[in-house]
Image (cartoon, rainbow, N blue to C red; front, side, top):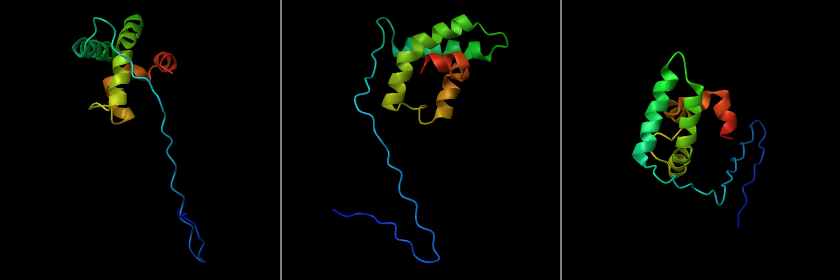
Length: 107
């Protein structure tokens, strides 16, 4: 077994230690509700994007669509589906996540 030592040399800055990444165990991936498919959740997502683009938003509808797409969002992120590589891409797909009410309900 070897150890990496940060040895200080006169006149040189010590190298920063590598950050340790902790992996979570046992994060259960949800299953879509009965009657929901990838296509129906994608349609809910399109409706959500249209509603968020409006000047006068129906927040009750937004809440309902966010609830309907929650499990699909989790599956997409855990499985690493295209479009979920970064937070900014996820926010592009689900702009309602920027709303304070949605952030607190999805924690």
